Each structure stands twice: as structure tokens, then as C-alpha cells.
Image (tube, rainbow, N blue to C red; front, side, top):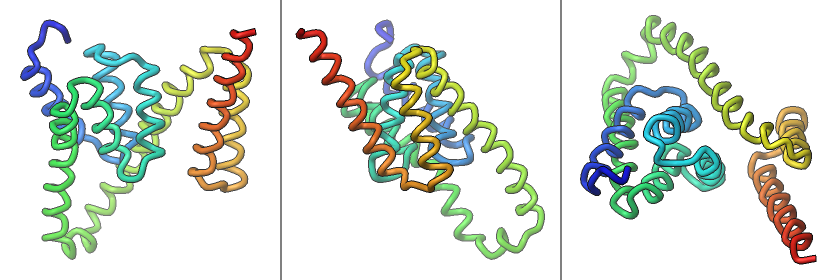
Length: 190
């Protein structure tokens, strides 16, 4: 990234987010997966932990996960203008697609071919979301910190079996993270 000028970074940021947003179906978690691959794995503009933190913040903030992630990613990579171009690149494709769909809404909802295509896309989206879960969850498992594994398991049980609202799970996870950090600092000071 250091060899690129600020303008080149902004252009790459815009067109990368435009491309990801234009060819990704299934919501924010799918886009986050592609952002991780591009910005962490390919370009090395972010560390995996940073992307994991950004995903958590994007999910816990009001609004669309993809837009929230773009805001955080753009700001981290190139400041204010990075945030602006990343968000624009992310929102332009859905605005265009939704404008076209709304114009032809009745034709879309009554077309059996469109229904079949959407059913097929659901399976692909589920696979991509599983990929996100395994790749980001693997990072937590690799640390081999039992408390993180316990928090992750409890969050899964709470949401899957007890249908606890995700907001409460995120808040509980944040509180657990704060408590762990305070305990570690206390141990370090002793």
C-alpha cells in the first residue's frame, strides 16, 4: 500500500468495493467474506484481527452490515475520503439493482424462472456464510483461549436454542471482552 499514491488507493478502494458489491448476493456477511479475501488476503491492507473487529463493529452498529463494514474499512485504509469512496462503491450496485427491480416488480414476482434462480442462489449464499463462520471462527479457535471458546459456544447456544436477540449476545460478548481485559491488566499490574 505504501507504493501507491493516495489517489490510487482511493480508486482501488472504490472499484474493489463496487466489484464486490455488484457481484455478491446474500447480504452483509457475504460481502464481508469477499472484503476479507481482498483486503486481508490479497492486498494485505488489513490484518485478520482488524477485519474480525470491523465485522463485529459493523454487525453491532445500526444499518446494513456491508455499508458499516465499508465505512470502517475505508476509514482505516484511507481516512475520510477512503470512507466516502468505499461506501459509494458499496451502495451504487444495490441502488441500481433495486431501481430496476422496483420498475419491473410485478414481472419479477410472477416469473417462475426468477423464483428458481433465487432458490438456487439461496444455497450458494448459505455456503458463503458458512465460509465466513469457519474462517473468522477459526481465528478464535487458533488462539486456544478457553474463555473465548466458552463465550463463542455460549453465544451459539443462546441464539440457536434459546432464540436470544443478537443485540443481547453482542452486548454480553462486549462485556465479557471488557471483563477479560480488565482481569488481564489487573494480573499484569500485580
